[in-house]
Length: 414
Image 1 (cartoon, rainbow, N blue to C red):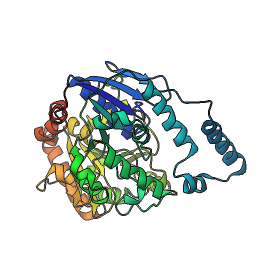
Image 2 (cartoon, helix red, strand yellow; image 1 turned 135 degrees about the vertical axis):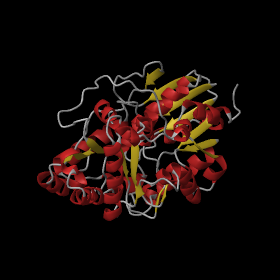
Image 3 (cartoon, rainbow, N blue to C red; image 1 turned 180 degrees about the vertical axis):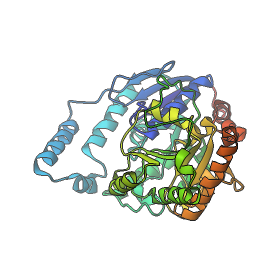
Image 4 (cartoon, rainbow, N blue to C red; image 1 turned 90 degrees about the vertical axis):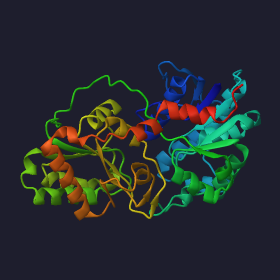
């Protein structure tokens, strides 16, 4: 089967979404499919063993010059015209120029795919918008929807109605109707999006974020990490809605209840958390058992730490439901260390770990978090080898074999 992948970025350092997309691409190749990747990363980048074509940006068009003028205007006058412009047109000039750039390259392609897979990141969905403009691909199109879209369809506590939301809504109605197939990283997300765009229920299938083979180039530990200690790690962005306060307070309570643990227990909170900067600075100042890095870190470093800590933490927003499958979930499963899941009762992470999984709590239940950390600490004291996750079912679910089964099941092999 020939698969054309149209993707925003293949730079694993720019976002968790790009990491997830690259893992999926690698596993498609690993599964034996003939894969051609058109990417809009805008830097010279290739994936080992994958045929990649970088899409050039159109730089001589009215939209290009309007987008640059908008940036200069905003920088000089300290006024952001984007909300006004998007209310009129639905999207930014940059978005339109980007999607036109993708369309131009796709129309030149002589590749004859059996399946066209669009992958995006964040809130852009540029590849989806572009493929909408190339009708010859629609009968082979699989639209991968990684997060709720538009933003006003995010569950509580994410409350944000974008400028031009009517245009974005109409765009996704078209995606749901024109794409022959749709795919989602989680069962709950497919159901959630299907409640707003019913055709997704008819065309939808689950392709979870993938567990791809990845070789760490630098496996040295940073100076602040001692592998011999009882280490708990939360790695990843902490948006405003994902407060680490419950986790940190739970860890502090655990230390109060287990005074000897102050010698050999450490909590690491690594990643962008700019909405919580002041709070994290206070915690860092007064708690030597907690190490906080508020900013980006190289993927190699974080991936290596995930595989060598005692417990990996997946922290989600306080809500009634979390339909997301965190992009780091496969990495945590591969690391084969216990996962402390801080998520709503109705969440994809909890659904996959199972109702009988012991190490789950609501994100703000400080006492339960302290108790769960205490239980994992006692396991570690007995024998660090007791800290293994050992979930072959999840490894299989996130594997190349499962992915191949889903794709072959489409029955579109030429």
